[in-house]
Image (cartoon, rainbow, N blue to C red; front, side, top):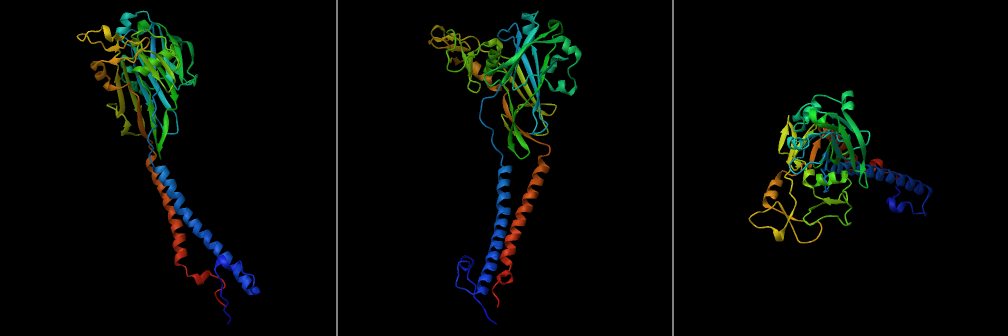
Amino acid sequence: MLSIPTPPCTRGAGRRARTKLTIDTSALRGRWCSRIASRVAAGLALISVPALVAINQLRVSAPARQEPSSVAVIPLPAPTRGAGVAVGMLAEVKDCGSNVAVTVVAQPTAEYWLAHRNAKEVRFALPDAKDGDVRFRLGESASDVTTPQDVVDRGQSSTPGDAANIRVLEKGYKGAKGDLLVVRLRVRHWNRTLAPVIASYSADWLEHRGLGSCWLRLPALTGDLTVLAAKRAHDLAYPLGEALPANRGDVRVFSRRVNAQAVYTPGLDAIHGSITVVTPQAEIGESLPSPPGSTNGSPTWICRSQPKARARPLRSTLPSSTPSVISGTADGASSGAFSARVISSAKSGDCSAVAAVIQSSAGWLRDLFMLVVGTLVGLGATLLVDLLKRPQSADTPGDAA
């Protein structure tokens, strides 16, 4: 029996001074080496690719840092300081792949009605709303503004009576990106019914967080950004970088996100705001900030505004009569300095928040995902172990005469 030594795969193919038998054996050995290499590559791919995908999908991403959007509701005539409106919002999240169902409930305060007994118009500034998607109707109770969830729980939608009582006078987008939809309404017999006005629409406020979860960005309902949204609704805002028409003592409000600035007007600041989030499950501990309360088991953010009075100049103000805001000696709008009373009253924030939402299907999605990953990784490991355990002589051609 004749035994012909077979060179390694990397050298056997390049040898020419061989017999026909040696050449055929080298070709067989080359195909064998290619088959082994493909099995090793498949095994490594089955282990590494699912592992990398699992690391990427199971990782929880942090929300991007950015200014919130803002909602503004302005009854006409415009309110004065401390006699504005209360705004409530309900945000319903079905899953992370759908838009958020938004319900905004607004009602002027009793102080406003006592000062403006014949008011019949109101202007809504709604962020991320689409023309044709917004619906308006009237509420049934003054408590709708503090517990907007009751409005949705009643299952009430727009009726022909609402169309007769609410008339849209004008609407349009504001801003270079059209991020703010402004609608002016006239409410029939509003000073007789004093009914809250309800706006419903859908908004894209969700961002990816992880497998089966997402971040929900909630807008501001009170504070400086609300005043800026009201100014934009009245075409009284100016782009950043341009000269802002202002008098000495005026305080400037601005937003880099929408590239706008305006003079602060206390009456345009909402008095009270609340946002309730209805979702399959909310990670309250992961929300920024955490909700201070709940409504019917749903997390609720509450904010109250302390509208600032017009700034008084520093050089003409006595220490014994500290105003809410003092201004410097520069001409035009001043950054101003708030009093300790105003600063301490701002603890409630403006209701803007980033809430962590988890889908109801997140549990079984995670289990199914891990089952598939585990199966693929196990298959890859089996291939590699099988190659290591298999004797070389079993598959290697050319080792026998």
